[in-house]
Image (cartoon, rainbow, N blue to C red):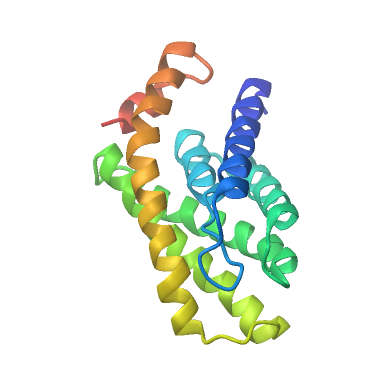
Amino acid sequence: MNTRILVMLSLFVGIGAVLHAILPPFFLGMRPDMMLAMMFLGIVLFPKLPYVLILSLATGFISALTTTVPGGQIANLIDKPITALFAFGLFLLIRNTMNGKFAVSVITGIGTLVSGTVFLSIVLFVIGLMNASFGVLFATVVLPTAGLNVALMLIIYPVASKIIKRSRIVQTSTIQRYSA
């Protein structure tokens, strides 16, 4: 594994943690998970399975530490690896068929919906600590979070991909082929 890439991924996790911690809760103590956008950015910029696994575990652990949802610690630890592997698979499927900005937006939007579904399912049905319905929480927390994450990714992805190309952190053939 490349140490420079691991440093970049840790920066993404740190930025995501700050974004996750400063946003106020939407509904029943649930706040939008902006760490997902940074996790998806790391998956798209460094699409290798070992990096995806490390990134998902680090993101899940930091999300578990910063969550305000009762039972969210366990849900985050389960949700992030599942979501990361799903997003990685989706990325591998669509990377050659769509342009970079649009593909990243699709991955971010769908990945956030998958993450929200897994998270809410674990919190509501397995742990049973929330007294709200799945539909209400999905509509009031997950859908707005998906919109925020897509908007954030539309801003951050072009900047991050240009920085990585210029800094020679990774061989640029992967990023040049995929950039918008």
